[in-house]
Image 1 (cartoon, rainbow, N blue to C red):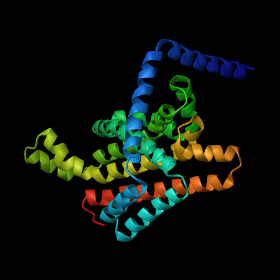
Image 2: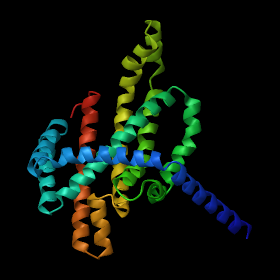
Image 3: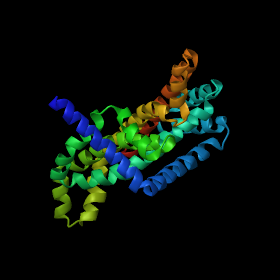
Image 4: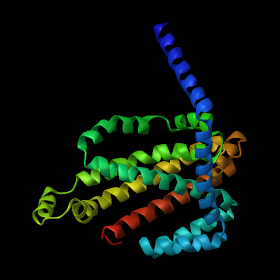
Length: 282
């Protein structure tokens, strides 16, 4: 009984807290919603403006540049397949949502990871928080979003932002801490300033880890976007959710194929960009 009373009290506190936020900070959350939807809308408009074959060719050329000719050709053909399945608008909506959420996550995670990389005690104190964020069921982040931001892309963006932050945060901090001591001592002995030490020694060593964090954030964002279809985010996630509700197996398979295509293409592109970025070549 005590456990039940505790659970009921905790639930009441959560409900009251969300209600209080909704009543007293409604204008703030409306502003957040407007900004998030505006940013997402701008990215979606940019991706939707050209015909599908222009986007496919652009990805093919980009894939050729950062990965190789074979992958570039396959990436272009794969995107044409998404259009042939009649899912091009949904594919671009999903891509816009993933790009928007990942950009927002990286704007926060990379600077914060750099700062905690210089403060190991702060980094250790944040580890439990990051562990909690990554181990909670992803859909749990949709519930407060619905209560505060309503249904739509803003809630999907906010929830995707939350799950995309920890990988980039962790790996950026790790990259800063992994700078070999001998190089730090070399920089100190040559009279480098703190900024020179960071930009010429620590940051170059951290680039591989930072790029790995960007790649992992993208993958986490893709996983969340599918789940976010239940809050009316649009895109392939909502397509699959509606297909499951109506038992439209063919449409759900089409949506799943399109998501797999997008995931693989972006995964390989970010890996290829990482190799080029720190001099690994193709």
